[in-house]
Picture 1 (cartoon, helix red, strand yellow):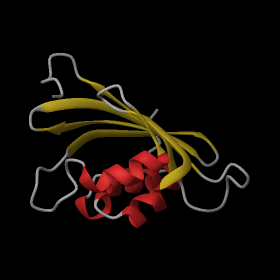
Picture 2 (cartoon, helix red, strand yellow):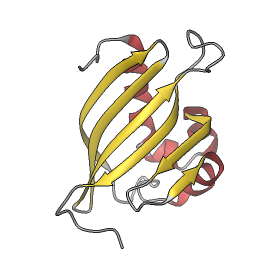
Picture 3 (cartoon, one colour):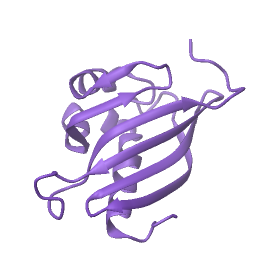
Length: 134
């Protein structure tokens, strides 16, 4: 079910799109505002990332400069799982490499009805037949 009109889903979609924006990717402070302190990721390479590792590395990753390659994202869907918990899925393409992505966004577990949604978990899975990551 795509709950795209629910305010929590709309907020999570805006956050996800912001994390793909070079201005946000290159700013540790802006990225930190969108990632949950307990954030983890399993990247398309299979690497596991922690909050600290992601905040430190994001400004150096592909898509973090205005004049560099841009990550193209399509097919967004969002589902409200519970108050203050949203699941998003979509695909990205960069230099011919496609990746299916899934993320969980949540509010502070102590108060799921207040505060901003932040990305708690993210996973990228290469699309079969797409160019492998070097």
